[in-house]
Length: 304
Image (cartoon, rainbow, N blue to C red; front, side):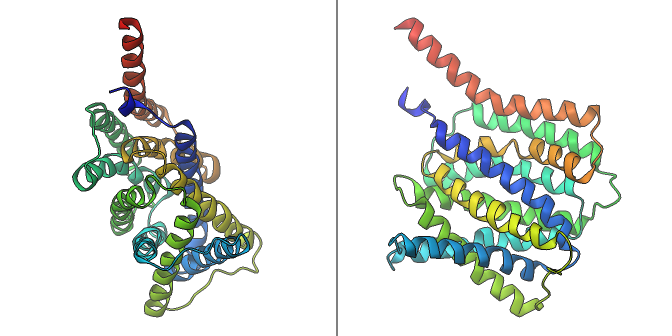
């Protein structure tokens, strides 16, 4: 029983940093989405990241073997970040930054249930209860932002589709990475698949790159490539090599709070008592499984 409750600290930190990188990247993407289209922005972002990571692998003499594992890994990239980025960027062009951040609060409930169904991973009661508490906080946040003038139903549906793809992605990520120390190569192949998806989107909807000559645009792209893409996906794959989907998903539950803070800091979004109360509710949901684990450990020590 004690073995099941072990939580890897480095994996948790990597998962949290991945959430921060992703949420901050969504805000930067929001600023570029109106001047480009989803495929063009995605192709520059993930294509540049994949090229840099392939270069790093080749220089280190660690070229991945061509086998079924590689094919699965590239196929995973077609889904996520392929479709995740495609839907997410298209949604970002139509809806507000706060809503984008809040919709990602659904992921912590979705991923663990899919992992239970598809991978047979353990799902203690504290996770769905904590997720439900977090979802209640999310609902409270949404009630305060539902009337935001920039909110668009189609944009919200596109973001929701992005989240659903990410839910399946977390299960695939765990399947590919658990018990292996190939997280950098996994991230590289994942982004390779995403690049292929971006090429397909550009072929369908045309090439319309962001105006890189304008002040701040090139710098924003550098941030998206290095932080939202390379750092984020390396950290994510590293965390999935050490954490079950339940614990990684629990960390992802902080996304609405982090997203809200970043939207306030970078976009000037208004944050009032309702949003702060909702953030506290979400954090309490995230804390529940950790507190229960610590209480069980304390009881075991006391009884032993």
